[in-house]
Length: 348
Image (cartoon, rainbow, N blue to C red; front, side, top):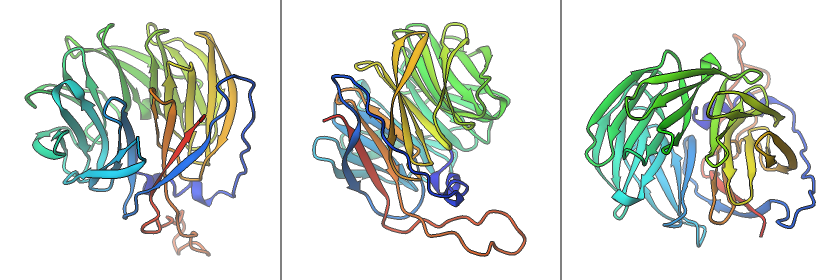
């Protein structure tokens, strides 16, 4: 994912779109805003991730990772010295967390008890997405400008593979039982598959009718990948053969996707200010059940499967310059300092 201060420049120039939530008749109700968690500070942001067992939400923000207690919805700490941080993942059994630091081409290894960095690992250029693969206790960084994947041992930090991928890798998911890691190759309109034992790329799958996929979620039980594409589509792909089984219109500026195994709901968050929610009626059929109005710029998202809440990051931006600056091009809106926050949505 690109950091938000860069990604929303185009979206914020578009006229305000009003998105209404549509009610669907289910016992579990509809999603609505539960709370706004003020974070503040300046600078862009990227991925959010939840560790349900420890009741922690990790939010990447400029040069640090903000830690939020999901029980109290309060900021409880931070992980410093993560320049240009994109993502953060945890290995609970090791008591370790890992961040991808885009500006220094490194990944941090963090003690989850103290939130202190214990080591850093050299990666390819601009590590973006990051993944912990529990089957072999390895960490994967997806190096955007390096066009590579770096794999290192979670326990030691030893790099065990550097995999050239021939394009810009984006978000990833693992199926440890199948021995596979899946990731989007954004600029090639493909999903690539890595064998976790050999660290070799074993499949290239086209994503048509989708384009430039970023977000990726997985339904392990039914072998389904959920892709968020820049051309406004959420795709459902069979993770065994790459077959696209469904395409859902989900708005402009899609970034993240999520899947909740408890409710069988899939989510796609779009920067225009909405989350499209669909129900997996069967592995071949997905029905949109709600279009949730959020906020413009709220395109990165994560889900807590224990509580079924979704979390989106957002901020306010200054109005774009008018008239446009000399020389043409799109003026880049400036984030208003201190307005960064996390939006919490749920069915309670």
